[in-house]
Length: 269
Image 1 (cartoon, rainbow, N blue to C red):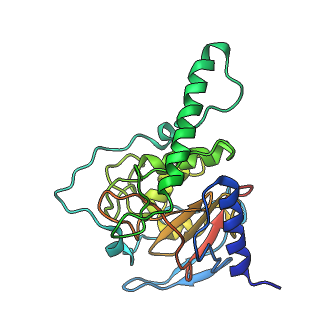
Image 2: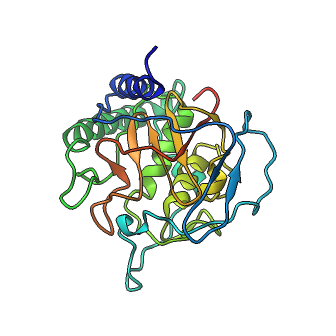
């Protein structure tokens, strides 16, 4: 029987091929499910129990945020960097291809949107597999095309991730509110998931260990431990660590070693 690492690698390639995202080397690998205890330097043990349903109750604040061990690889912004605040995740999620048949009054606008999506897809194909020097961030404008074939929820997550893809990294950014001018690893993932309606409040990386359900998803896979979190959406890596600069994209080329991370997904996605 093939190992779970090989099965998940195959899944990553299948999803990437279906969405036109391509498949990098070293695809997603599940590293842990169910109950686990994680130790990080300078912190107490953090116990996380897998939750089988997204509606499972969790006590906010029961898992404290610890230092991100990959902060140095995330190009933390100096104090001199000032960025405009983001829109709400719900607003960012509106930047998707409109679902359903348009009315007569919307036909021209819909056609223009589709042409814009096609142009974005072509640009993404040209840039998303070539990293910007200095890291793994994709080139172009740092966003990825929103594929019309994806479920609407996933389209909204991509739109949310695009909205803050080039925002600076600041530890704790995006924790007090979804609307911020810088985001750390969990703030970034929380914002994108909220754009799809999959989170109602920001969560720390430790809390995201219990988000959704255990195992990899077909479209969205979140990987988390007490200190760091990132995700794959439609086969493309979204991560603060490994960026190519302060304003480089969180969307990145290829994949990373997922050892030591809990693997989560949203049921049905």
